[in-house]
Amino acid sequence: MRAQSLSTVVLVVLLGGLGPRDAEAGPRDFIIHVTRLGGDTASAQPYIDRFLRYLEAQASWPSGSTKGTFLRTRDDVVAAMAKDAPGVAILEPQVYLELRGPRKLEPFLQLESASLVSPKLHLVTKNTAYRAIGDLRGKSLWTILGESPPYLSKIVFDGQIDAGTHFKIKRTFDALKGVRGVLRGDCDATLLDDDQIAAAQKIDGGSALRTIYTSPALPSIPVVAVGAALPAADRATLVRVLSSMCGTKQGGEICREMHIDRFVPPDTAALNAVQSRYGQ
Image (cartoon, rainbow, N blue to C red; front, side, top):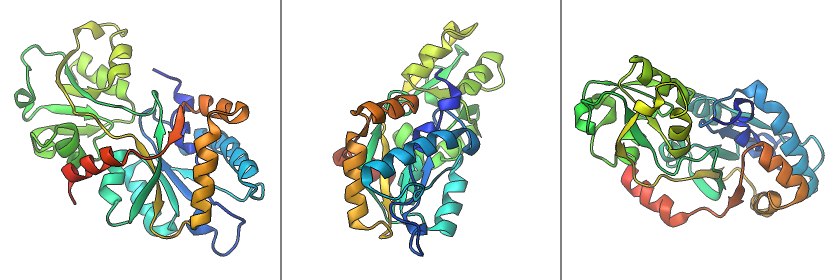
């Protein structure tokens, strides 16, 4: 697995305000929620600060005028949106889909990263008696998506089951915890992407892991405007700076240490398709 210290650094990267600190600064702040590599607010802060100083310099914003907050859980995101009214958020797709309507979220970029984005997920078990999803009815599933049964049901399992009633779900903050749970017999199954399976197979006993289901293609991590709080000019500046960042010498170094490959325009067709399956 990749270094945990750089974990959600991925989004931690994201700045906060988009202009000088004034009475309107709060709505221009960022919140970041990316779960694939774990991490916490304190360990992410140095990466955030480095990212923000780069952003400010490229945007010609005053140094120290931006801020961002890394949030570890879906509940933290919900609370922050209600209390702090941020203008921008970088969110795991399951949280974006849940909040896009209530919070009027509008994607204007998306994050591409081999380390932070899972293009698809595999349902993995060790017990040879389990050959299909139906065999796991009433069994335990450990996953970092444990906070989002609707996303599991509608997107990961493509509407085939109601994950919240089909499984006994436990949320983990580390994909390898699910792997170890399966190998020890503490849980019956877990969800892993291709890279996580490759890492799991290197663990003692990992060769016994078997995939019994693979999800459809999953969406990337969107960068969204929250309601109307983000001024149009600031949004345009963010698009310009972030789109080119990872291709520059200084910005590329920051992207690499945060495991970000690039920021690109949102895949609208893919998002629309997923949103249609998710519903309201």
